[in-house]
Length: 203
Image (cartoon, rainbow, N blue to C red; front, top):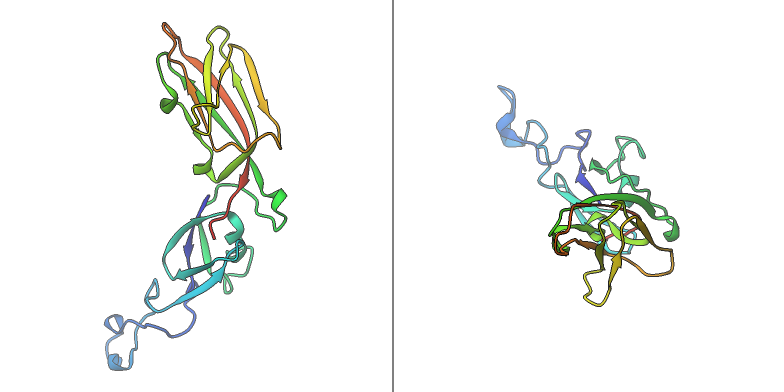
C-alpha cells in the first residue's frame, strides 16, 4: 500500500479561506485579505475509487491505498490538475485490468533456534494484498523448519533443510506465512520467501 496526501490547493488556486491574520500591513483584514491557508480548511471533494467506493478527500489529509490514486498525482497529471501527492510509494503498478495488478516481494527471514511461528512472519496482507504465487526456500543445509499458511492450524507443513516449496497461481491465495524453528536443539535457519502479490484497493 502507498501513502498519499490530499493536495487540492497545491498551486494556491482560488481565494478560499484566506488567513486575515497574515495580511500585510494596511490590508483590510475584515474583507478576508491575506495568504491562502495551507492546508485549506474549506476544500474537500468526493472521488470514486476503483471499487466504486467514494472517498472523501480533505485538503491536507493523508490516506493509505493502492496505486490507483497515483493517476491523480503529479507528474501523471499536470501540477494544476493534481489532487494528491505521493508520500510513500510501494512500487506496485495499478492497471484497470485486475489480473495485471501484481507485484513481487521477497522476504528474507532468519528463524533463530527456538523461535516460534509468531516470531517469523511474512504478513502479505499488510504489504498490500494477497499472494497468488509463493516460493518458500529453506536455505539452511541442515536445519528443518515448519511452515504455517494463513494462520490456520491445519495448514502446517514441514520444510526440510535445503528444499523449496512452490504454490503456483491458482493453487491458493496466501495472506500470511509463518516459520517455526522450535525443535529441540534447533540452530538458526535462513528462509527466503518470494511472492507475487495481487494488489488490493480499499476504496
